[in-house]
Image (cartoon, rainbow over all chains, first blue to last red; front, side, top):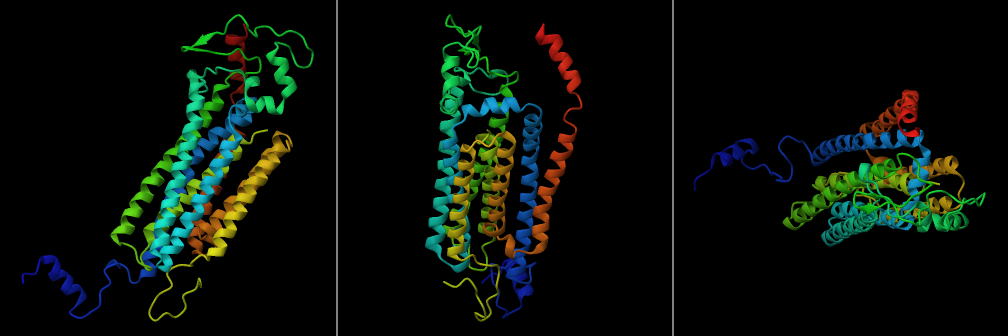
Length: 279
Length: 118
């Protein structure tokens, strides 16, 4: 039998009859220390993630502080019900992520697989709902920056009609809701065209209204990218579960991905009221 | 199923294990708080009070997620300090940016007047 160099080193380090746990790396004294070291690493990463998002949250804060009318105008174009559904989906995925960690800690492999699969499904459901929202907005011209060209005025949106029915009717008839005077420019004779779309004339639209959608798309877009990265991470964890990598003492990777996932959920918990629940 | 592993031969206690009941309880609380957030929104308290209430409820949800789902209640204090410091730094960042927000407003207003009002 020929020993490789690695085998010789292995033999030299561990001696002849020492029991060696292959799941404990050489430079750690115990599984607890190995686990704690990994934990510190993931917490440091999550700190950088929070700071990463803070740039966009700062932009949101400054723009909203300076131009609250942009946000009061923009939020009518968002569907609160879809945002609420997305919040519940992510909260469920957080539950299954935390439960997956519990399962690996007690050695319940079936439960571990089930919880990871449900987490991934919830994440995909979140992306699907996002896709529905985004495609509706893009179709109706409610995009970012210079491309902002909404096809319908704000008083024609469902949300506005629900909250201010009398105002909506007045505007639709071309009249000012309080004085009843005829408004200029509510064109029945044709709408201006911007970038190939007809843009509805909207007397309620503030200057720089596109900033709301710029903020909305960058914030939710960056969050969506993090959800996608999380799906990939969970798929990798699932692969490792089937490979038999985890024991009740070595499950740091599952714990780390679950912590990352909770941060993704945390960000959405704040995004939901900031974007969808503006009064 | 017990969540503690005391004296199982040579087995070390790696980390606190969350009881299933606690997991479900926190989930139910989070969903309830989400319902409350939306409900308060439909009460239409006005932009400012609505914003404050929404942020307070969101922070309660965040605290539940951080303390329980993310195990911070049972984790080493150092990890808690590392993570909480990020939020303090974010507050500092946003705070300083907002104190500065009106700095160039006069120049913006005069540009708008010159270019768009005419």
